Image (cartoon, rainbow, N blue to C red; front, side):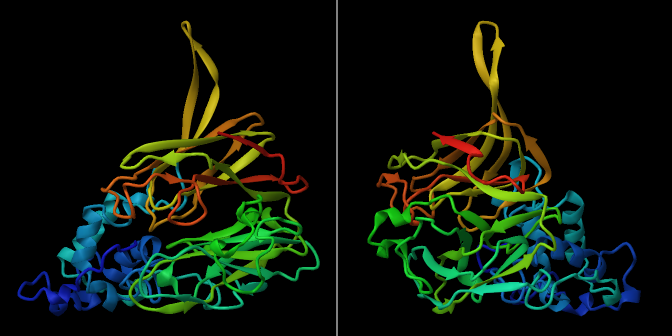
Length: 444
């Protein structure tokens, strides 16, 4: 659950039993009827699965639900926002396609939270609490084999719009490495909107003239060619509520010897100045995997969104040159992003005297700048050689978009947040012996 606004503490609503249930919620476990939901037995598992990734100490949400004392203060707010389906964030729920990180609650879970609040949020027996499996603090994954850290902290101001910040760090790897798990660990998560960690292979032209080990923005680069993405490998994307990447033991991401790690961070201001010096922890594959996970992209950099347009459509297409196993989606838009869709366009079918392609929607999501996760498929799908893929994005450049800085301006492609992009990233698995190039032919 990500709270967009700071909600009032229910203890501030004095005068009613609902706003001050402390006297009855601390009832002993033996005094609570077995039919009444309790925090430790019924509510905590729901919160752990759907909410505490953000509602935790040091998380991006303004309150924690990790303990009974913390969560019970907001029992009625939790009841109300889940009943209205305002939380978990509705923009993170896919409208087509099944993914493993669908945050939506079942009707039964919503009813449980409501019943718990309506009975004054009883604690129950702490021995009923589910066990939590975590890696060694502060990591969620097992102890990393290597930790790559930003060499210098990035200063964050109290207000204003911030550009993407980059830092390049040589890995120092003298031999090729395969990565099974990765985790981004920010030092200031409340201000980190998104971080893309990229493996820049030896010889890449991307950011070729940038300094190593110091924060910079693309606007400071004198050579415009340095800004052009060269197809380097995305290792992991951090977004609110998503900080880890893990593959089956038969799969891994590849880091060639001599590569650099590029941190590409998008920060947001919140009225408090600070600094961030993020790290990425890497767990190596125990043996060379049989399959390599590769991030591909359907992209379009040749569009202009007219002023005041509230539902402007742009698409990008690509043709697969070999069989792949589709693993996950990561749509990337900027301030005017509205919704995003991935499709397969099947060969033309004859219907009467007309020829029409059949479009199969693989995944569709409402887009919100505050919540930009990747979406792993519940069941990976085999896509055959010759499959035509399409990414479609819709943009809102109207005054009704609260993120829109200037609805009277035409907006075109660019690599800063004030510009726009269409990035239909997706992960596929291929045989480990196969190179990542010549998998996808892109065209608009």
